[in-house]
Image 1 (tube, protein in one colour):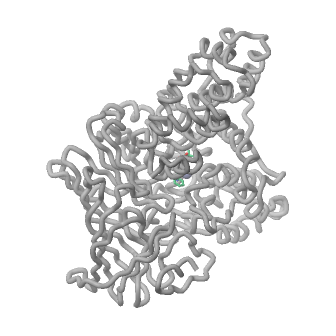
Image 2: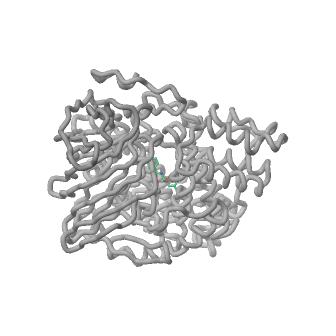
Length: 612
Ligand code: BES
Ligand code: ZN
């Protein structure tokens, strides 16, 4: 159906894993290895070179995913030595799926594509020196998940197919190149780097970054890459990574990827973190100075099992990646930082999720979400994350922790280096766990959890009584019984402050916020999570003293988790909307291409005639 916009017809596979978000004809031909040979050209904002795919399967055409790629020529080979040029055809361009590339492959086992990327490729962000900490050198990074690998590599861009990969990249000699792979060779003087990923991964985990990077080890198999001025602080912040790996290994079996390094990106990065294998990418907003936001490392590390080993079959099974990961993240937090900290993080997350859920279209409240006609990256909500983890915690509670740990370990072994669909998971759950625990089977409405909106009544949620003091403090201050300066905030953690700011009543007003600001300096908060919560309250209350901080934050930081509530709060009034558009005009050139796409639409930017 999706392929019908091409002049050729490709038979649609009928298995339940059919990926609505790929044109690739994986049911007849599969890629097994991707080899990249690329020049990184910062002036042209272009990757240029060759991608050679090893393929196997039936004789016939190969259909690949591409997005805004310029294809110069396609060659095929049977032996990997002599290549001959073959005809190819680009189909019609789809708004978010891109353009299918059909290659007359015949029976060849190697397909080499000479190509270059577009300057605004959706999977790449080219940063100006002023967007970096050092302000002297440019920076490039990729973000392939969900369906953006195709904008910088022509391949079968579906999580249902796996590849090993190798790469040679040439970069300006003063810069360092890193990838989600082993470093095979490095020649800093010439700027030539080679990489190898010998384990089969889905295409969305292929990643590249180039910048003025330094490296500081934090353990035998862990370390941090970041710009030189950031790297020491980052290494201190993330020093518990090895302990996290050991916890996860003791629960779910060996860490199979060799090294686990962390790359700290410039603040434009649209996510908190991205689980690229061997090299997690993180936003610098995760560095608070007190390790209070390192749950993100626990999260990205957990994906080394849930996601990178056992991978969502299609994007509608995304909750299998994220729900499991949030569950494991919490288990890591419990072991490394204690039950209380894990419960605080989890209950803050559930608090935010319940607020979000009330405003979500019922069809987006479903774990096994229907994504027909939709871009999988756009409607990212808390549902796959928080509802998914809640489902797993509920099962854990019913069958007991030991039984659930055994089950999960078996699940990761069973599906290691494979894709899993929601249906396969449900079958596996029944066969290996619930059928052995009849009471749990009766108590847990699995189908309702997976296929229906909302939250089943029978569920297990963490509530942290430790955070209640923050609610009480906010109420007492607001009622006037205790002035801000006399609140007992000694020993409060970041989590308490987040809870406190969330508890400030909607109608507090600017003057009352000034009292709080005087006592606690919230407008000057350096913790991005606290600052974002505070700025939302400040907008809502018309607290103008925070305007400069708001503008600074929105123009420096590109993390969508923060941009979304701030722009949404601004857009609630006419005056606020004007302010949002003025800030957006300034910030827009620095945002990631996919972020620009989302906010152009939600802020009505293009309609104003100023877009594109
Ligand atoms: N894999 C996701 C990020 C992602 C999801 C990118 C879908 C593109 C499409 C990553 O593991 C993630 O979940 N990041 C979260 C942080 C996490 C601690 C909840 C984020 O960036 O907010
Ligand atoms: Zn995740």
